[in-house]
Length: 251
Image (tube, rainbow, N blue to C red; front, side, top):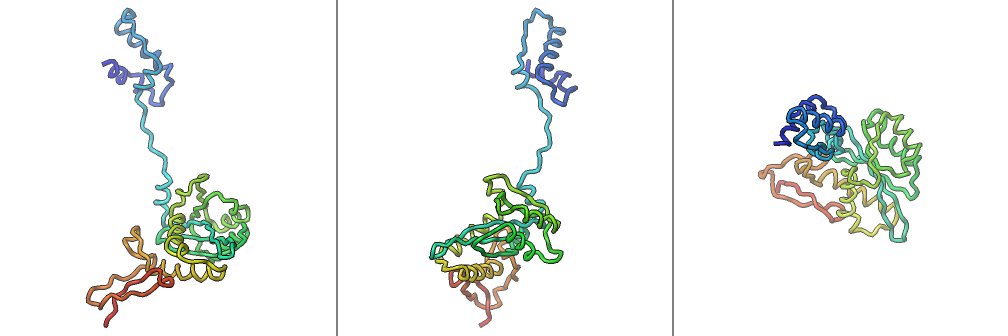
């Protein structure tokens, strides 16, 4: 009953901006003493007022997931991952992924990545007026001043993830995981040239045959649904036999 009285107190409705707990406590004490008299001996602590105070509901700020969803058509992610060769060399692989159809826009390999080299990859990936509206990246030092100046000159806004938060760049992280699980974990890379050849074969399979649940079980390059009357199902080896593409072919 007492809680209802405090919840219905005019002071709470007249101060939606959440006045201080000390102010509300004093005003409620004054109201109770005026109505029932000081002989009731009712004391309202600040902790009680804080617990019973009706807080106004504020619209939540846009979450990171909402940002990715709202800009899926204009977002591109960039990220690096490493590959060790048979001789112990460490190669760095750069990937640029368009979110809308999960297309790999650009992929390149180097042994010594720099901010200048990374900036040049942006030019090669987006010639003329094909640059996206947003670029999602992490806080790696490889994205230094030369890279940021190049991106700004292309009219691309940057979305930078929080420190140590790979989940904020989910599309690129998922792509890198797929490349490792479906390809590189089954291959011994000899050198840079060999790695480029393997990745080129995987990209051809990824774009033309690999299905995605988010694309309604279609591939990044849309495929026509074949009717059962078009012939029997034939398997075609992809990525050196690691995967297969299935099509109907007339006998």
